[in-house]
Image (cartoon, rainbow, N blue to C red; front, side):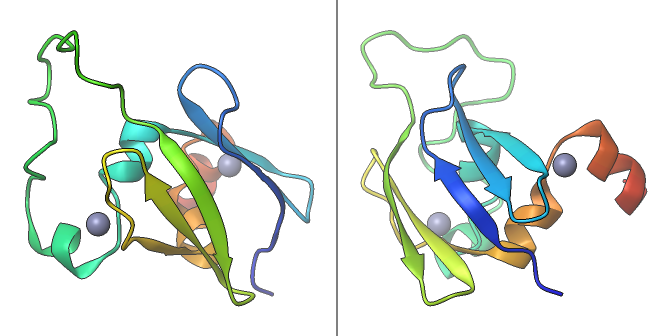
Length: 112
Ligand SMILES: [Zn+2]
Ligand SMILES: [Zn+2]
């Protein structure tokens, strides 16, 4: 059975997006984590995004922090996330999104 979100909270606090799934599981994704796993052709083809901060670099002040501006459901299988940096071609299928869940429980289950 494909995972289905019951609700999607763009601003769940602490720079995370939270998805509550129909099976009761709640996934919390840090914005940067989600953005760097954007499944669109442009991002998937680039090892590193032009706007991506260098790992370990200090945050640059004056630059608007990354956040999802809005999200729209795409049919019954995916959600499209519109980032505040103007990038919006990432369509995250629910399957993909659930697979990205960074919680310990899911990490243990997928063996990653
Ligand atoms: Zn992308
Ligand atoms: Zn999980």
